[in-house]
Length: 218
Image (cartoon, rainbow, N blue to C red):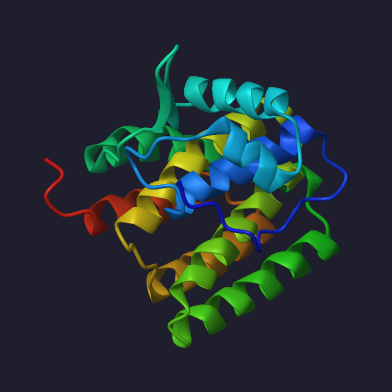
């Protein structure tokens, strides 16, 4: 099992949180491929932790659908199901739209400025064809809105769904386009104007358009 040695070790996290975050990231970006067996001893050595937090992390990842555990046999990464995008995006789109609506009441000049600046970085990544960076910045843009909504229940569900979407994006080489730049600009202006109905529509379309980028999933 290939374990990178130059990974970043997140600060101020428990051993369990660190192991979970790193394993999930490796699964999402394909460092650990679908169907690959995970050796908890090797992971523990690579992360500099004991096997206990690694095993606990694997149990969490199994509950979230990223690994399968076969007691006494093996733990392996789940396969990537392209068609699952049709089940993932509609609830994610609805929750993102709700977050934007809730964020309006907590909006400030600082948050709006952060959204504008983040979209500028997103546009730069798109125009320079740095699509990997664009995916990460796009998520940062939406995270700002989710954080402004200040609802931990919505945030936790979105994080779970978005992790699976991110994995599908990586494994299917999905690239975001200039449509998303325009969507972001519209979202910012609609939040400013407190136009809830139109904001709901634009936010949902921003996410649901991605389904069109996944051919042959019917």
